[in-house]
Image (cartoon, rainbow, N blue to C red; front, side):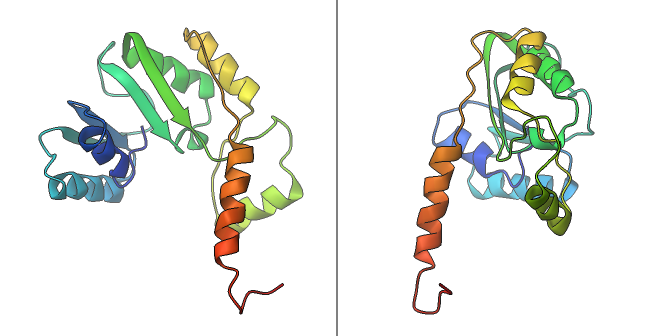
Length: 171
C-alpha cells in the first residue's frame, strides 16, 4: 500500500523472493515511475502497479498473503476502516506489516509540529499507538505487535547530522 516509486516492490520481488507483488498508490506519476523501475529491474512479470482511488481496495477478499505499507497510512484518516480493509484482502493467517514515520498522542500537535506540517504543506492524519492497536484488533487482527522506533531513529538522525559536521557547519 502506497508503493510510491516502486523501490520496495522491487526489493520484495528481487531480494526477498516474493513470487508476485502488487503495488498500489493513488498518484499517477509515482505509479508510472514504479512501473518503469520494475521494467528496468527485469521484474515486470512479477510486479503489478495499480493506481487506485482512496477507499476500498479493488481486490477480492483473501487475495494476499502479506500486505506491506511504509509511510502511507499516515495519510489515511480512518484507521479502523483501513485496518478492516487490509484484514479483508488478507488470506486467513496472512500478515500485515506497516510503518509510519510520525506518531501522535491523540491530542493537539505541539506548536513545533504544527509549524513543521504547515511549513511543508503536508496533510497528515497522525494517530497514537493505542489508536492503531484498537483499529487493528477491531478489524480482527491478533498478536498485534507495535514497535516504537523513535530511539533508533534518534540515533540514525544524530549520525546523519554528524556527517554534516565539516568545517563549515554552524556550531
